[in-house]
Structures are given as C-alpha cells and as structure tokens.
Length: 198
Image (cartoon, rainbow, N blue to C red; front, side, top):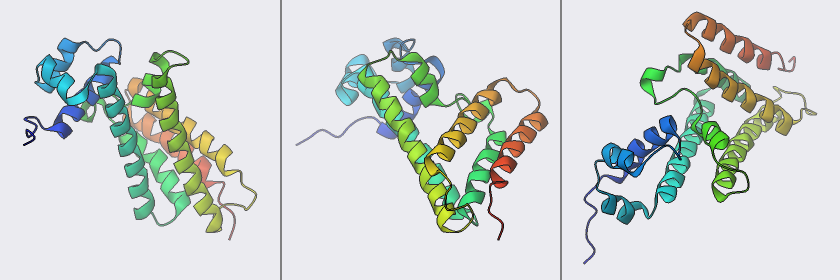
C-alpha cells in the first residue's frame, strides 16, 4: 500500500515559490527550503526530487496563476479590450505587503538563469505562453470590432506584455500610490485609444 504524503504539497509549493521569488534560484539554499517548507532535506528530495525540479514546479505554478488571473479578468470584463485596460490599471494595486515581490517572478528568473540552459528555456516558454494568451485576447477584440482588422495582434501583445512587466518593476520603487495609479491609468488609456470608432 502506498504511503500517504505527510505534507501539504500546495502549501509546500507556495512556500517554495515565495522563497524563490524573493531570493532567486541560486541564492536559495537547502537550509532556506527546509525552514520555509518545514521539511527535512530527505523529505524535500522525496517529494520533489531536486532543488531544480522544485524550482520548475514553482515556475509552473506562478505562470499558471498568471494565466488564470488573465482568464478570469477577460471573463468578467465587458469586452476583450477593456479587460486588457483593466489588467494594466490593476497593477496600481500591487503592494509588496501582499506578495513576496511586485516584480514578476518569471522576469526575475530570466535575469538570473544562464543562457542556453533548460531552466532558461522553461522561463522563456512561460513568457511566450503568456504573450500568446494576450495575443488571443487581442484577436478576440479584433473579432468583436473593437480593434481594426489589420491590427498586428502579436506585436500589440509584445507591447502590452512589456507594459505589464515594466509596471511591476516600477511598483517596486514607487512610493507614491497616486503616481503609480496615474502611470497605470496612462498606459491603460493608451491601449484604449486603439479602440476602433463604432
């Protein structure tokens, strides 16, 4: 009979994700993981095989949550373009106190992991997937008549993704919430100006 895991996998992944998000992959030690996950080294390796495998699982988890958040926003917004505007505007509400960092974990990881490695390929794959999701929302906006038919969805998705990541970095350094709110609103309004006249 298989033994039931004596740990909460979701809680362990969340704790590891928070740790890697703040410290980075290389600076996170096994001792750090032991303390954060409240697990012994043998239990960590039995559950996740290796530090790299655990890191990969946290990247998957982070990217999955980003995708879910965008999907939820699109489902609840009155239109695809307004969902993208709201996504940009909502970044003003990011505060370091309710997350390990306002900066994107994927971008932080991309800056840390070496070129030509499987880890870098994983991070790039997640970034590409998020960009493709944004492009899908833009194509929905084109189909709905919100954007012109000749709009380059992939190019606009790259632009919006750049705005999102830039705003998340700005949220790390901005101490005035009103200035942050105004910046997010400016970029959301810029995207809104692309709306095709009815």
